[in-house]
Length: 241
Image 1 (cartoon, rainbow, N blue to C red):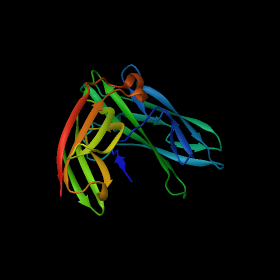
Image 2 (image 1 turned 180 degrees about the vertical axis):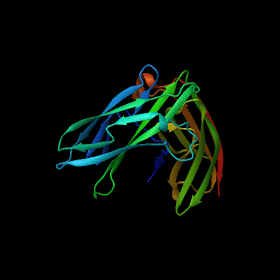
Image 3 (image 1 turned 90 degrees about the vertical axis):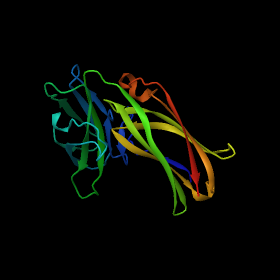
Image 4 (image 1 turned 120 degrees about the vertical axis):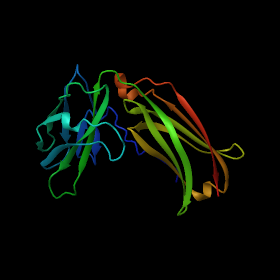
């Protein structure tokens, strides 16, 4: 099995669903001085009533992304959804005076407050102040053979004052120029993070390999919220024992 793991969370314009029980639309929010408040629509598909607590938290641990957690006001903080019902959650950002330009992020956590197993939905909130710009940099790469798999790791760093939300085309070739693996998809970098490509060891025998990474910012799902960034390419040579 070949898979490209994307630890940088992707949130599209489509509703975010949890086992088809709770959907939230839109599945992310962007706020700024001209639009400091917005609403979310929550829809339940459960056959019974369910209650959810809503809290605000920082987005990820150790990413280095600037936080807007303390700026956000939500109403209500507790939701009771009857079968097939639709409820509205209001979100507003109180931006401090004098705060620097940039994009600040947090997450809304919807947690079901019964004994059903701690089901939850997470919705990111981005607050943009002044001029925002972004880019991405490959900060390092390596590979490890372990437990029947080869894990290629790529350390990515956000450049600029906003998260990098783009697309990544990744190809792996062996020493003879033959394609071993290729995949593409969206990638979101908040502060910093690690991209991983995991392949069975049998597909990556000892030898030299070349990785091609192509980033672009043509994100249709973000619409006008996408930050245009010049495309960027990296080529990495890796030796596998």
